Length: 293
Image (cartoon, rainbow, N blue to C red; front, side, top):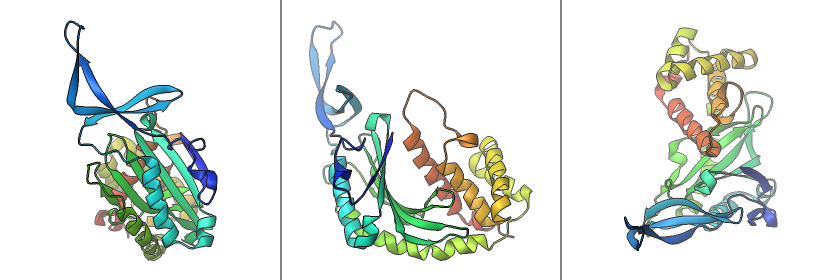
């Protein structure tokens, strides 16, 4: 599920327009005895639930020390950071894209700023974006700053050093998200030269590239990435930028060669975020840059 709204719109934070603006409830857990004649209270755990389509849905079972951070609370803190870190004009044109997986057990909000942009090595621009991940029993609160290439709509995560991680414990504080968001814009500008450098570096032969892809992604996925790389060469030349674009195409597109498996779980948003982090890990490694001829 996903939804796109404007950050400056007053309706952006209303539950009716966004699949992530629901409330998670804490509920006690009980289990039935062997004779089904008595219920016993589980004092060490609790259930996290929500209402979906007018029905209660259990998102997860967690320990009783787990601290729920509601989406509304988290995104309010993030947006305070955004408002203090970008100009009014940049804020006015920003867009929000919301996605959920597993009935809302994992939630993602992406902020895209088309007016905070650097030239792409191609015909368009690369714009700043922030991705915030919240979960209910499925992991920590995370924030990633990154970019999106408007030429091919490929998403880019800039590096683990731009991320923030907070566990769901009773002492969790989301105030740090404001500080990190403010600094993320500066980190985005510092990556401007990185894209130009990739476009100016020629790549080694197919054998070296194939070995690199197979080592990092396995032979089956490596073969599909190699095919995508050859497609990128047609418009980008045989450069590291073409290889980088092949990898970010995989992390941003869920169709064609990289279609998602059709399962009963709504896993798309979570799977695509995992792809982005996998690509980040590979492109952050020196082995990627060593592919330059």
